[in-house]
Image (tube, rainbow over all chains, first blue to last red; front, side):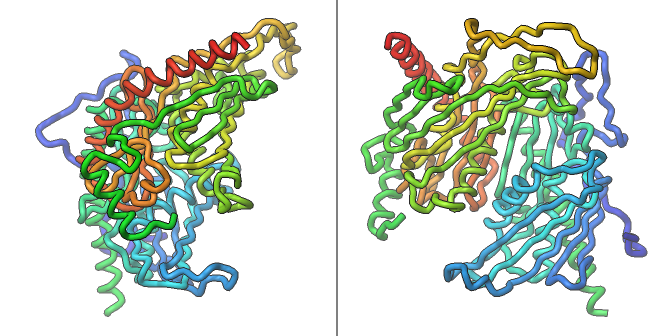
Length: 256
Length: 286
């Protein structure tokens, strides 16, 4: 997908105020340098576009380094007749991987987990009361899996929902942090995720400064969690601004 | 859960005043009963009752092949089944969503990071021959009766079942060529007890209004705004954290919950350990 002419790919890097960290080595003599040459607290440049799928109510395409995701939103549509009447709307999420998304054929097991995690992330932020008796379908397709897949899917899904005009309390953004040895790296790529000692994924509403979803694996000490949380909150608010700019550009482009 | 407005106010108000409907304080657990060895055919099993919540966990070990991505580790799979005896809505496909959510949270707490750091179960100890033969552990949880706090009960049951697990010793018979399966001899006599010193306990903190409670009953869970399940191991490090529920939480609240969970874990861990060893001793006698 070609970038729009004149739109530079924005980079968002959270800054730890007043502290410079030397990367701490995992096995004492090895220096972990990130495969794409980023700093430990630097996120990948984000390319976000709305309106990628013309037949959907709303859609968005996101490219974060090598992770490419397309999300389309259909709805609100009439719920199937078999379903019980409900005076709040329903949300149906599906995350699938293309067969060529990862170097090894067939990702298989992640789909159901990611679908339910996307559902949990979105259900707290969509105002379901505004579309009773109907269903909103969110379909996410990971075209290439380059690391931090679920975070990219969640951010892209909230952009697609905004493009579809579904009412939400706020945009949600998701960022993940990987812990390798004693160092924390934000926005890990697949190689880093494969050998991480712990992972931390956070979804938050930047304007309300609230965390809607948080999952953590591996062994963490409280100071590490504190630091990871600050990194993620900072990155999430910057990503939120980038998403808003993208929506404003799309809106002004359609007015012309 | 059908609760009238008056009952809802009663529950919320009680929690705000540190006096819950059953008389407990906010950070007190209900009495926990543990029985081990309830399923003789399984390698390890346990039944845990916390108040009205009743769960059974069983561990079965089978010989399998390590995955090509991690040839030096065994495999662990966690499945949870919410039986319709607990709730009629669990029948058919109704309990599937809850089961997969619980299984995912438990897997996250037990298996640690991708490199194996912080794992409750040491996957390398399940290896028999690198790249060829390993133990596959199937951990199954069954929810018989549900009165809130399923995740904590399942975590405790899995911990007890793993303590009860005896894996037979395996002798690898002959040295064979690289592409053939080696002959293995599974001993009937000698067993290895599983090392469970690093299996964490899970504490779920439920936020009702502005306060957190531990070990919520089903009524209290229906009034929650959100819940955070934190798994802490013996060294006091956090091994897994899952936030459940839709509403957002301020970051300072989450950090506060983590410190409360650590504090609660100390008492819970020692209580569980004593209950499990009492149950094992009971089983040895009978």
